[in-house]
Length: 463
Image (cartoon, rainbow, N blue to C red; front, side):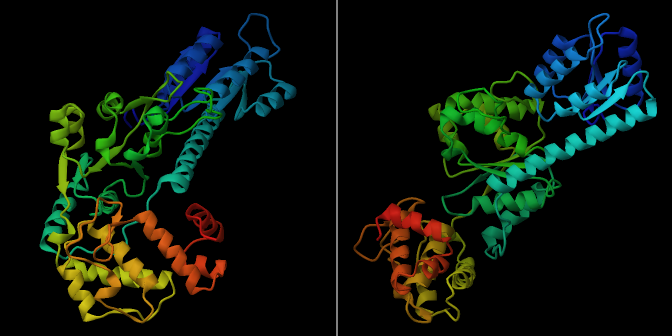
């Protein structure tokens, strides 16, 4: 067991011989110990360091036996770290004091003189419970907010993709940071997930963060977490994205969008594995494998002064270049059929198939929006085609029309590119028309809940 693997315990007792006896016992059992004399030192220690368990005395002033000092220390410890397991110890144990300590959040109660076997059993149980609770919180937060879907039905038959997967297989088992480069819509998030699933961290959290969606004003709180009272809206402690990914992988999409002022803070975590929640001076250690992605020219950003060179060096230990769809000709019909099957099931359009003209059009098109554009085009065709066969006209592709960025859709010839919002509005109208205005059926057709459909109708002014 390395020093990093040993549990950390805080001991607070006013008697030096008691502190020393506990320190020697716990050290022999493989614990890292910090022993302090009184409540103020105990609180200062918790502000500066993470502890797995605290073992505190109830009385610190000579000839005092009420337990009030220890109960107040317990209250303050819980304010600083509500998840810290605390074990109370006193030579003047009474049922009333024990009940009050438990009510305030103590995990257990030990009387002096202690029995070594019982003491170690109690501390071991509290440590295990604390770890389980923290892991449960991380998993719950990750499942609710952050965990992305596994890469199902991944298609990569083109030679350019086979080379990428060979490189991925070599780097995935390591803990090296990986930078994924590629155009918008190429599937960088899917590659990130494959990296995680093929790593030794596969059973731990995979946390995805879109760096372009985090305002600079809340960057630190989102990434590093905050403690209750750190700012006006901080009503409770919050776990940051790095803590959520502890032991697993953190995927930072659109990495080029990190504000320059925040880049040194990210660099520090990558270099030292240490962070502080906003509003706290206590340093936390995290073990995170970083995967990042961008469609930007980071070397150019470095030359322009908008991206730190030392941060780029930390991010791109290994670079993976994801080819655009126009360089994956063999994959286009396979992806198209996969999307057709998926959307036909979602929208209850069994029996749909491609006409030869549709397959020819799919192969001839340049796909400026890459796999994302292909997915949108097939989904739109599934919803808007009346018959059982999708032909070239059903796809609304125009070889002379170029999608304007990742948020654009290809429109019929002679018209401007259709944005995702315009497409969504059209799909909602189409679903309502096909179902005669039946909200329940239209929602099912679109794969939405009734409230979600109502929100979109209100958003687009659809009666």
